[in-house]
Image 1 (cartoon, helix red, strand yellow):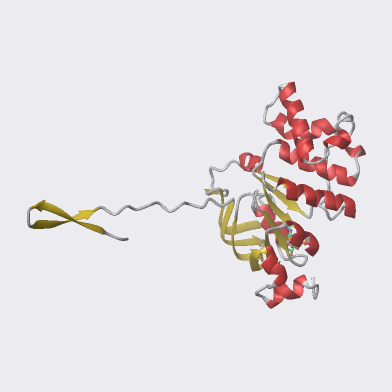
Image 2: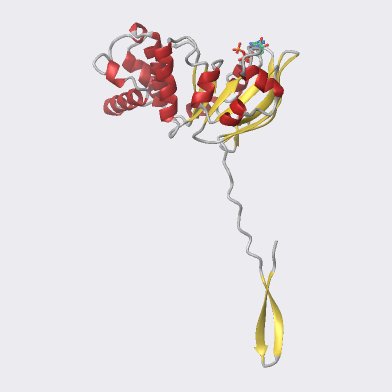
Length: 280
Ligand SMILES: Nc1ncnc2c1ncn2[C@@H]1O[C@H](COP(=O)(O)OP(=O)(O)OP(=O)(O)O)[C@@H](O)[C@H]1O
């Protein structure tokens, strides 16, 4: 802190020191999308995640990579409390979403999940029409107005790059769509409730290369609007779409940083061995 002193002439020949109060400028506070501190997760006696710390910036794409069973999905599910109902689940540590503790007793899980949506590995549309799938969350939230719903359907399907393919068939069963279209429909369903974050657990692993490319393009295009956190086994996918990468191994977060650095100059040998395909 710097004190600023100024000489002030009071009367001829006489000066006094006038101390000006220091001006303390508040530091701009970074509000992270997620600020995760010292997370330890257990299923029964088994420790699944060990002292994980991670800060995730808003409007970014983070890839979670690591060999099977290292805890990527468990970590992802910590972010919208999807582990809560798993038998034997317990944890300690803190997960802040936009500064609020999501595991606080006062947090309503339904409200959290409106802000933090999730897309799963296998497309899981409901056995309903395309239209009904997209508005599912809005209906749950009590939206009834037909023109509001119509508008939301068009907007979400356009954002999910599916509108042109289905706009004349909105009453068709979602189950009649291809796997790739179903996954984009699930993304549209997630987008329709206007979340802040979209969690994705291997969203393209059940899809063909063309559908995979469409999902990647979509995530890339939507990053201006949403924060994405994506579990992937596909190293090319991680390096193509994400700005940040987190490498997990046996429950430890081994390395987390800029994707380019992780893929070109990882600081840990274990990371290098994994990304170069020596194990995993
Ligand atoms: N419901 C559960 N009950 C008990 N143990 C579980 C449960 N779900 C996962 N596990 C265990 O927790 C560990 C981490 O699993 P998790 O699914 O988070 O890993 P992952 O890195 O996502 O794996 P994958 O890449 O194969 O999907 C594994 O050892 C797994 O067997």
